Structure formats: structure tokens, C-alpha cells
Image: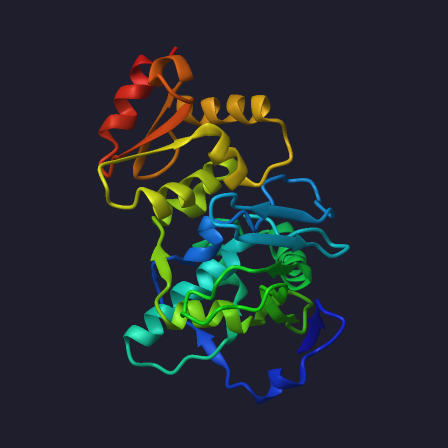
Length: 294
């Protein structure tokens, strides 16, 4: 078999890590909590090669996202991490040893993440690896494990990625070395489970909104957030008025799993315009909203 590396350099430590084979069937997808909270991944479908900075004015926490020439990792690229985290967490629950060097069968990954199995889908895996490897972060956010990070620490999403083809040139499997920061988040259970329907969401807005709702509303019956604050959490470059229009489109569709969404203007709320989120596991609230929507 031939190996097609998506990176220009291979870390020496890669060869020293044991290989964890992601081969568990029907695993629940999981995400680290930090990337649900902060706008790490690009929402735009167009390549984003500009540096992006997010700052929480209340806490003073900030994060800078520094893309490579391949562009900033997208929220669809995050599927690879969500898939890997689910496999690692489930293996740990079963008492299996895990490492941050993960071997993934391409066909299993594509089927689980509902991407199809045509040539375009296989090729996209290499592009995903390149963007995940090339996106770098600088931050002053405290480590969730309790140790304070030094201001300006730089780290990435994966340290290495390689796609391996069979004798016919078809991608058979790929390997990734997840960054130490993300692996420790999974190992220390700083993760949340996603609804499996998440992988079926095609709109980046649906996906980002789901993970924000999952992180902040969780299992509470209701939660709300100011629209401008939500706009900042999305990390989009479009103006607030365009963001408002797109959020209203999502609300009209009610396509976010587990949650019913409602927009409230500043006049209606008496304070600021808001997004109101209601827990809706059986979908009954969403269905009633669809029925009365024009």
C-alpha cells in the first residue's frame, strides 16, 4: 500500500505512540467542550485564510485562530474529531487502552458521518486532514484540567495526518495524531455527547447553533442568549443584520435536533433581542412551530 501524507513534516513522536484502532460500531459522537464554547471552526464554506480573534469582554479570555494556506478548519472538518473522540471515549469505557494516534477506516468514517462514499467524499478526507493540521491557535484561556496556560500558548488540532491508499489507489484508511490538548480533554471527560442527527445537518449555521445549544441549554428546559452575543460566539465575519436573517431562517426550518428555537425582538423582550432555546427531545414543539410558520 502507498501512503499519501497530508503534511509536509512528520513529528518524531508519532512513531513512538501506540496505534489506537477506531473500530467500535455505532458509537455516540462526542465533542470537547472548549470547541463548543469558542468559535474555533469556520462557518463559511469558502476557504478562510484570514486570522480570526475572539475575545470574551466579560472574562478577558481570548483566542486567535491562525489558518494555513489551505484555509481555516471548517465545522464540517470537525466531524473527524467528533468521530475520533467518540471512539476514544467508548474504548476507554470498555477498558481498552487508547492513545492520541488514531487509525480510522475511511468507509466507516464516511458512512457514520453521512458523507456518501463516492470519489469526491474520499478525496475530501485529505483536504480535511490538511486544514485540521494547518489551523493553529494562540490563547490565554485556562486549561480545563486546572493548570493555567501561559499567555499566548500556541497549539493545533492534530499533530499529524496521513491518508493510506490500496493498490488500486483508493483511500483505505487514514491516521491522525490528535493534539495533546484535545486528547487530554477527552481523557478527562471534558466532552459532551451529540445527537447522531448532527451528522445529517448540512448547514454550518445549523451545526454551530446545535453545539451552542447543547453546551449552554443542555438538559435545562429553557435558555436564552442575546443575539449580538450569539453572533460573536458564531465567529462569522458577516454583519449582524445578515446573521439575524440567517438565524431567522434556521428558526423557520426548526432543523436543530433536540431544541426548539424562538426569536424575540428587543421590543418583545423589553431589553435586547434574543434567541430563546427550549428543550424538545420528542420534536413536538418544533413540529407545532413549523405548522404555524408562513
